[in-house]
Image 1 (cartoon, rainbow, N blue to C red):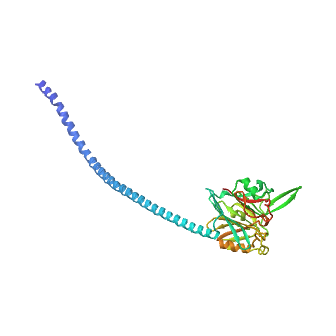
Image 2: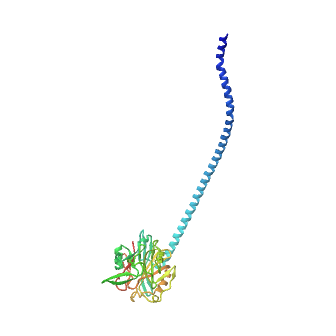
Image 3: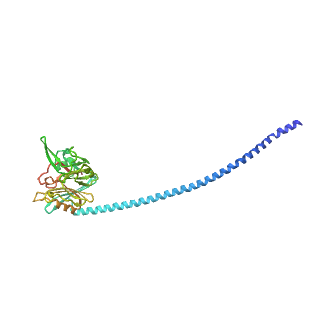
Amino acid sequence: MRLINLFFIFLIAPFIGIGIALSDFDEKSQALAIPIKEMDKVVAKAENNFTELQKNVAFVKEYIEEQEREYKKQEEILRQLASESQQKKNLSDQIYEERILAMLGPPIRTHRSNRTEIKVFKLDELGYRGYIAKVKLFDPTAFKVAIAKDKFGESETPSEAIKRTGGILAINGGGFYKLMQNGKQYTLPIANTVVNGELSNGGNGFQPSYDDIFIAGIQRNGNVTGGIVNTKEELNQLNLWQGVSFVPILMQDGKPMSLPEKWQHEKQPRTILGEYANGDLIMIVVDGRQNDWSSGVTLERLQIKLLELGVKEGYNLDGGGSSVFIYNGEVLNRPSDGRQRKMATNIVVMP
C-alpha cells in the first residue's frame, strides 16, 4: 500500500509543479500589466507628437516652397526692371550721342576696338581751325601719359611718342621747361606728373601748386578729373591714373571757371583735354599764329565753345608751338612752328 502511495505521489508531482508555476506567472503577469498600460499611453502620446511633427514639417515645407516661388517672382520683376532701365539708359546714351554728333558734324576718321572708340572731327570756326577727337574708353588703360623715352629729363615729339608706344591718337601733354646741368640739357615737366597711378617727378617728390597750375588727367575708371593741389593728400584725393600739369582750368562740373587775367585775352594755339557728361573724352587742338589759316583762340572764347559742345570738364594743356594732333601716324593740324616740338610728356591713346 505504501508503495502504491509513493507511486501516485511521484506521478502527480509534475502536475503540482506546473500548477504552482502557473500560479506564480499569473501573479507576475498581473504585476506586469500596469507598466504595459503606461507604455501604451507613452506610445500613444509619441504617435500624437509624431503626427503633429509631420503636420509642422509639411507646413514648413509648404512655407519654404511659397517663399521660393515669391523670391523667383521678385527676381523676375527685378530682372525686367533692370532690363528696362538698361534699355532706357541705352536710349538716353544714343540720344546724347546723336546730339553730340549733330554739333560736331560727320567724323573724318573713325576707329573702334574692344578698348576704345575714336571719332575725329574738323573744327572750323570764325577765325580759328583745328581738330577734335571724341574718345570712348572701354579700357581706361588705353589712355597713357607718355614720359619722353620713358626717362625723366628726356624729350620727344608726339610723333615719336605715338610710334614708340604703338598708339593711334596723340596730343601734346603738360607744360615743361629746359634745365642745363653739368653741361647737359634736360627737358622737365612742370609741377606734377602721374603715370599708372604713381607720382612720376624723377625722384623730386610732390610739388605744391603755384601760379594757378593744376594737374589733370583720368582716374582708373576713365573719368576726367583735375584740380589745383597744394598738398600730397589733395593730389591723392584726385585718385589719378594718368595726369599732367598746366594752367588754367577751363570747366568744372559744367561751369566755366574764372580765368587768370594774363590768360584771358590772347589768341593762341590751344590743346584741351575734357569730358562730356556721358563720360566720353574730348581732345581738342586749335591751330594759331597763322593768319592765312588760323589765328588761334582766346580761352574765354574756347570756354563758350566748350559750353556749346556740352563739355562738363575742360583743362587747358600746353599750347602755342607745342599744340599737335596726330591720328594713326599722321599730323592732322598745322603746328605754328612749322614742325613738332620735342616735349617732356605727351598723351597717347592706344588702339
